Image (tube, rainbow, N blue to C red; front, side):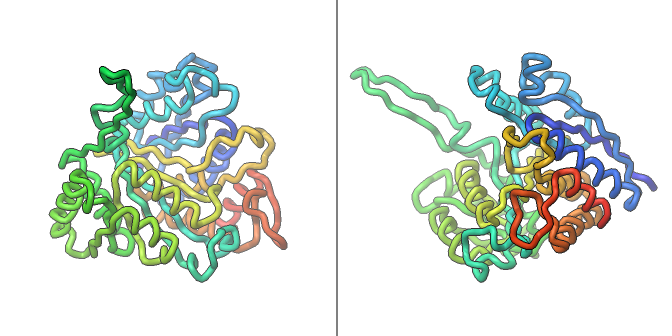
Length: 359
């Protein structure tokens, strides 16, 4: 039986429309192989939305996203909008989208493609075989805790305050996501906190530990965040799935990403308790190369694979896309950002065509 899904496309700014176009062609090629019917509708976000409507996230866009099964986002932002008031900048649209869809879990994989191993600044023997998923809590912790702000005391001295706070239900729901992802991977979960110093981290550790018996097939371990940061560089292969809070996850996911040495290859996903998730590449809008057919669409394509796996529960289709990326790299086909000696350099459209040929 054909399974039908509604997908909202948010091409955004810069190279966004180019990499989105290549990705849609890949999805259209994959769909019939797995008896899928994908209905695409496009909406505005970021700078493109500002220019058209005055808002970085029009209400019509948010409503379209809410009515869909998944949201595929490309990239937002550009120098021409940098001087706008903060509430009118493209990035505010992205934050509004996450809030409007209730997205509390951010998934950031860091996978080493052996064909690109020389792009990393670490030794090949350290990073060969690395395949890590960082699960970051996205809507709590120190970025959102109250009180926060810069306050002036009676003596006219300024004091900056941010509060790291988590309710147990916030911890439970991100832990549940992490355990379930670990089950789909190699059944190893490392929870990262600072329980030796922070009470909020002690609650975090207690709640994650309490959930472990519900997932007896997953091996749970704990690390303090400073040790985890060191171990990610020292021996990254020891990690499979990592779960942590908002601040620690912000830092560790970027550290893990740089193990690969190629940010143009990295996808991400943001998920909520219900409703559609948002799937997007880690990289930015690269306005300096926009419209020149120079962009690398592979992170966007891999984001579409994450959409299929984590948003639509179509694991086989996701794996097929990931294998296609692998095979194209194996053929020596490269965009400029991942180019090396002896490889064939192509543009965005040609990379998309190469993927379609493999598929």
